[in-house]
Length: 168
Ligand SMILES: [Zn+2]
Image 1 (cartoon, rainbow, N blue to C red):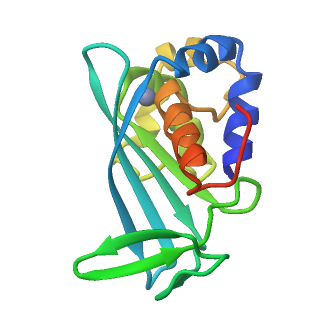
Image 2 (tube, rainbow, N blue to C red; image 1 turned 30 degrees about the vertical axis):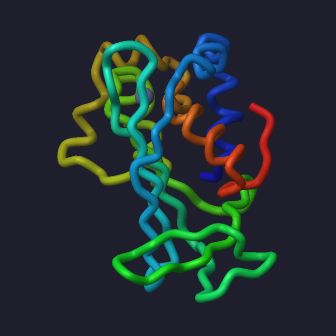
């Protein structure tokens, strides 16, 4: 799935309004941007929180083009050891992504359905077991959406220019 797919899906969700309105109260600290030049992937790792509880939130993107020197098409940089790489903007309608957040909403509402769509970052063993009664009640239409933390991370990256502009 793409970032646009995630957002469209989350908007379909019955409680979508809550997640989109709560997104603005989420703090985002991007801890690490990991360029994986060989596999043409990139990982954005963030610490996110609205109140006391902090969560680890990830956006992993496939098919990213890298160059050694910046140009118009590769405006963003990320370091790997002593090397610096420049990468293209993540295109919200094109690039395939995977996401993960360790909050309860993500785990119990969305992770299983994201996993089924190959859009769950770092599959944990026993992902099948996520399909519980609780999850069924929370997501009866089996929608692969995301929590407010992932939305906030996407919004931050769009504002920084690492991903193409999007109106959430
Ligand atoms: Zn979350």
